[in-house]
Length: 218
Image (tube, rainbow, N blue to C red):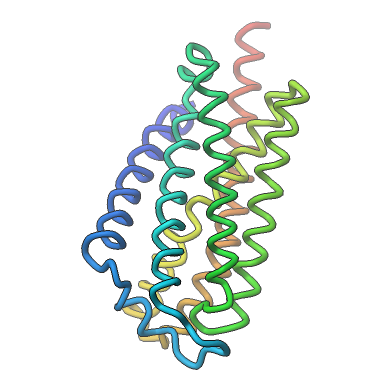
């Protein structure tokens, strides 16, 4: 229970800090993304930087909205006391995920390290959208437990970019691996981490909490 008690505040803190960091880095500190774009070499198609930047801004804004909306909707207080807000905020989350997927679909062919990561990003787009749709379907069927489980799986993918850059930083700056290799490992490592962390939360934290609640009321 102690883990569950502290998990939500930790998630909120991490989410807010990361949103502030991403907003500052992408919209203020380096709005032209020069430090990131310099790694995009040997691309198979021409990169129109002004278009790419505008798509990237939209991508960042909706990714932050998805992270914030999802975090708010995991609040038990919001679910119980503000059901209408919870529902509308949930639709905002779904719209944000769709916008992130659309913009990511445009940027995927220009991925750092080429096709191997383009495939991964396109796979993430499909998996994330599918999980989000599953969460929506189950709440429409009035199955809240399954809805929450699929929302956990979906929300985990809000942290894809965080894990990619964390792994890339550790591998490139910590071990000296080439940036493209570090980034590729980061991409696939992030996908694996998202999937594993979501299942850990569902199977060992949410399930245990439900079991303990049932025992206390028995």
